[in-house]
Length: 314
Image 1 (cartoon, rainbow, N blue to C red):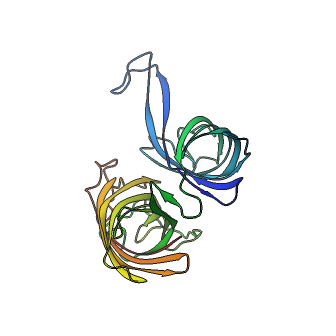
Image 2: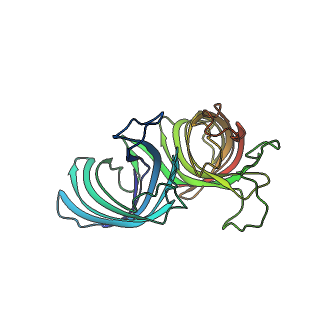
Image 3: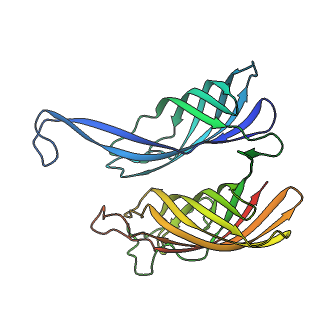
């Protein structure tokens, strides 16, 4: 959870939530999976990303609030389903202050869009009871535990192809298609906490689509690098290096099953202009071997990934 306040009452909150969709069916015929007259089923793993505008009513330690905004979703292991990738979320809750910490029980309702031609359609109405725990940084300086916190966004372009030329690019495509924003790009949010004057920890949540070479389909991924960052000097413009682990979740698989973990290294230059910090970075990620094949004709994304990113933080 990340929340950025714009006034005493208004803020924007971003979440990254893992949720498992479960289905159960009653089997009337024997099979390798289910016996006769028993319930069996499976799980669909999803990641949900609500982006909410939040209004808070200040009433001492107890602050009622309401939130609304779009929600995005990726999935894996669809087992006959194809959950919608977007929806609208609204909710309400109560925020309780406890020093620099706060607790926020919340009830949320999400209405998902129409599923994409599923064999097993999912329920479009989703109601959740959530419990949030947060830590407030110092007003104005944005410090956590005495350390500076930078917040912002990253955007850039991949410098390597997503699939090798030998990829079979299934399913076979023989027509024409137009996709909105059909260009190869990377974009997302970033947060960085200074540990010392030169050492810090940076976490990103970035959206990237993997493109086939000769087909219109894409594989939707969210990548979460967790990186240690070392800066070499204290000048207004200073070089740095980063290294750490990257985690990945994928949806809209299209005969793929990308690996969920890899390691990342990179270097760049940090420049400051007034309150803004700009960080062009070149990153290399080596992903683990892909997960076990879901299909006999599975395609395998390239394990080596190079990106040129530009970060803007304050």
